[in-house]
Image (cartoon, rainbow, N blue to C red; front, top):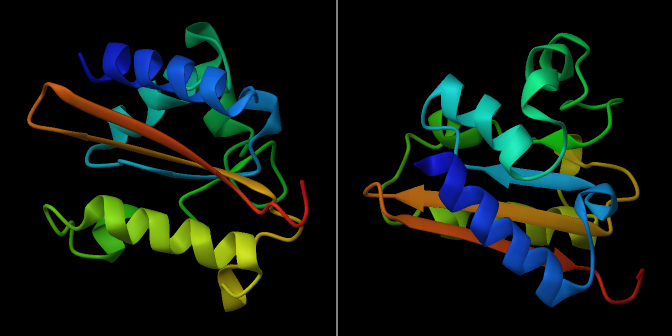
Length: 134
């Protein structure tokens, strides 16, 4: 279910922002379970379902890869604060896009994507851009 919610929300967000998966530099996604993170890679369009394992093994979701996912450390690094998760993700993307994320900084990040889900029936994707760099 999370995959379908993520895919639907991502499709709408990409359309509204006028960008696609290849335009995203950085992602903060809801990694409540390892399996959820892996499934979101394909739901958000970063790889096909058949490529998920290779996407992970080739470190394509990390610094030096195709896209940097959860440079903040993800939900566990924050204690998975229910209700505040989305705000923490947006804050991280804002710092990244402003160039003020310190040692976590993704160099050249201009477009970020935030994905969050909850209670099995809520799925959200937001796309943020640094308008001075776009």
